[in-house]
Length: 283
Length: 352
Image (cartoon, rainbow over all chains, first blue to last red; front, side):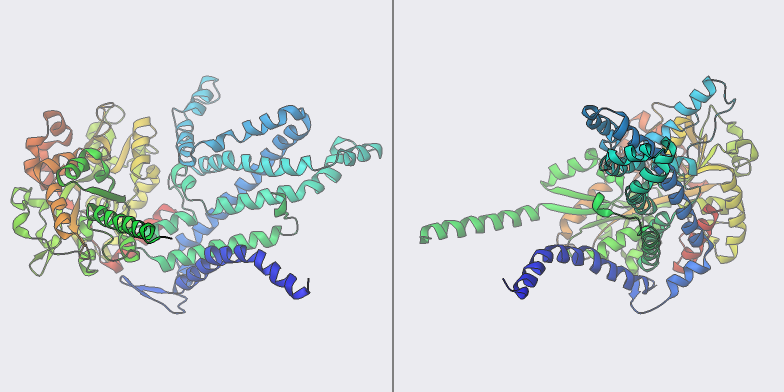
């Protein structure tokens, strides 16, 4: 077979993926980017290269604040989720007998089976003034008055962490079980203690799995509308919430698109920062 | 392929096409608020006219207008819209004139006929179907009811952290205006200063700013004891199980909301769409709409009273409507520029 035929066959195999990506990513993104440079005159959309919507991001404090709030929540959720998911994945991979690992994984991801919205409302009830958490703390005498937990950033972060710990556990577990036990044995033979083995051998080798899971957490968290809307009580607004406000009453698609482009920019930035360690093929 | 097989295939294709066309004739597509999705409201119309009413809920007039713009002409037949936004729909040319003599507006509560709002150049484009109040909902067992009779004591230090604010800037800013002694119809750019100060004070005392379900949940679970912007639409569905959840109109007044219904200009079934509108504003339809499982509200047509039982009337406070209508003002209906300023002020306040 000639090289030309190989090339044609290669393109043939790649074509469905390319068409899919073009149809469902490239074209919508180009339309969104073009929309972000349009303006509204009443209900009339005026296409063009107007920077107005991006200038509004700089001039309106609540828009800039929404970006800061989104980043703060997303980074907190990502770090906390990694710190909780790694030990859980470690225990499942190395401390639970292989025949029970599948069941342990199943239990770890069981909450995935419930509706995302229902789970968020459930957290709202758990964190309420007369919810389980406050009742438990009052019961054991740690507090005298119920704490304000629902409708706060803490509630938003809790709802997110509950979801993303499951996701991260899977990606980190997949990385850990691929790690040959010989690495740890070799480190021990060379005199490393358990912490040194973890610090200098296991952690660097599992970093791609951690970063892949962390990147996914970042992407999904920063674009999420439901969790902050239900659990945050609108005490502060994230970028997706502000986008929804622009669409809800005024249908201001240009400004909403500009905000969405900014979100895409933040995700791209996160990708560039983490790309050194990302191994999306480990998913 | 034999000619007989081809004939059968053509015949079945033709029948299928005719069948789908016939099915399409028997459908009505309506863009509505959630109270219209109650089967108890829709099924009687479907049975009486042998049609299927396809309903799509939306939130926010902007979302509805965007849906219509992105649809093909004729896709939608009926639109339910916030009463104050009828002018936007008329401006956009999406509503068809309605025959005034076929609408029972003479039987309506006069304050909600809103002829100026629903018509232009002598043509009626929409008709009010339901109304209610954005005011103060509260738990009577957890607050001093006397405090709820004045806006000056609702968001006071006494209730710090015990308040939720309804997450819609127009009625809440209307309430803030009333607290400042400003009529809702008089809100302009200059009034936004004092309104903003009041909003900040309100926001400072609030535990949350919540949508319908979240506000109901917060009040029902005791997370908060007061909902600013609440009303019968918030507490009526909870009243049976939790009678302590109630609402009042304070001495400064409150804000009145209305929703209207109209036929879309591009509808391919204008007669059927008009029949649907007439059903909704008929006394029977109005009684069912008023007590919809999604949210309760007063029917625009006073004749609905004949189809509501005493308990339903008590929960709607039927006998107090004359006083309530006198004490309330339609919520703000800003033009585009003022709307942007109001929304910016609202979002800035939320982000404080």
